[in-house]
Length: 55
Image (cartoon, rainbow, N blue to C red):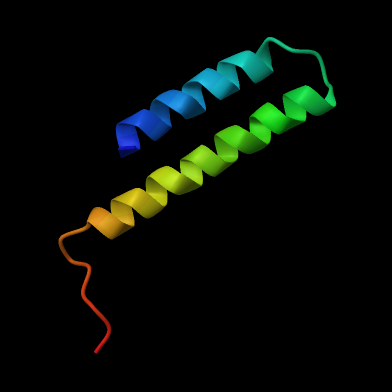
């Protein structure tokens, strides 16, 4: 997946969670959105042109 795909998934999970009352399912969607945000950041770091192998 690309960072844009992760951003789309974050938006979808957040939208669904906002429409739900407080519940374990809502908490799971919020957690999923948080994880997708982290994945997008990691994907950007790994794809960075400045990334260098360990010396």
